[in-house]
Length: 272
Ligand SMILES: [Zn+2]
Image (tube, rainbow, N blue to C red; front, side, top):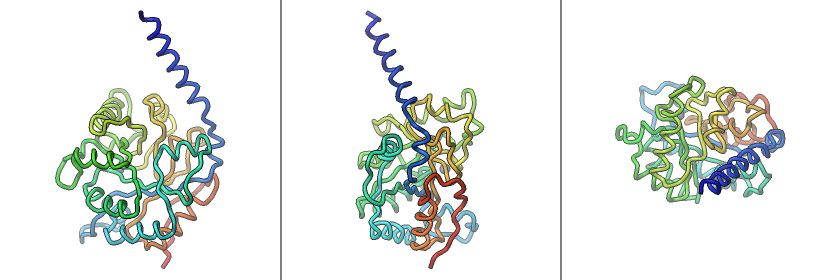
């Protein structure tokens, strides 16, 4: 009675290994990177906001102008499954593909970003820090997250407490990654396949923990990727609140235009 189950489980496990082994990291590194933008708060600046905070705070009018520029320039948003198939199998993407990602569960991503994305038929990825859900009125609630998922956006894991991935060990894996996965799967009714590193911080030795948990890819910020694990170190740039739409356009082309770019660093160019 147990044999078929055992055989099935073994088969599944072996398939998993085969799938993991079939990923060609060299080929992934050689493919042109798809531009990926990262957003946090979308609200007007306050007098108390420091200059460095403005990397993470985008005034709604700027966000609108940036989305309009993307649409007018012919960009098409794609989702992580498409990116995965492109990176691992060379699957075709729409012309001028771009990925929009939103971190930390901020409510204005629902109130401000969602209508703008819908205006242009864009979709995004929302990386949820689960302790922030309903923390106060600044953050999204369960219903909003479910709605984003139902509307075709992707919900990803951004840990329980916005914890530094480099410092996770022992029981923390369960608390910071496994439990949030369970929670998000319960909210959306879909598996969680993608992860974003809080603060963009990662280290190579902990990446196997993401593979172990079945993640297909993970997103950092703009450091060079790990050549031995590029799927778990996919690059993004912050679209900054003080960039003009032209600056964003310039930085997209210059940061992601290079094949296997080694040293992108932080893009600071300002274009009028
Ligand atoms: Zn974050």
